[in-house]
Amino acid sequence: MALRYSELMALDPDRIDAAFYDELKRHYTDEEIVELGAFIGFNIGYHTFFGTLKFYPMFAPDGRLVSQEESARIYGAAPASLVARGDQACT
Image (cartoon, rainbow, N blue to C red; front, top):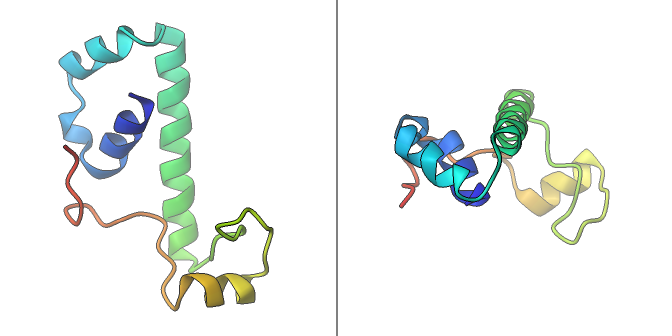
């Protein structure tokens, strides 16, 4: 459910409605929903900001801390923090 929440927040926030929050409440307390929403929102903003700086991820897929140069070799010429809205549909 948390993954679904994060996907919708990033890709289709208009689909987060009262019914969705009711479903979240079946799994989480109000406090947990607020904390989860704030965490997701912060991370979306963080990755969007770093994307504008063309900043590559600091970690390789195996979890190693890597330099920007090594990260560029791993991830390619255009780092992407988020898939553009509309490129991937949430189901």
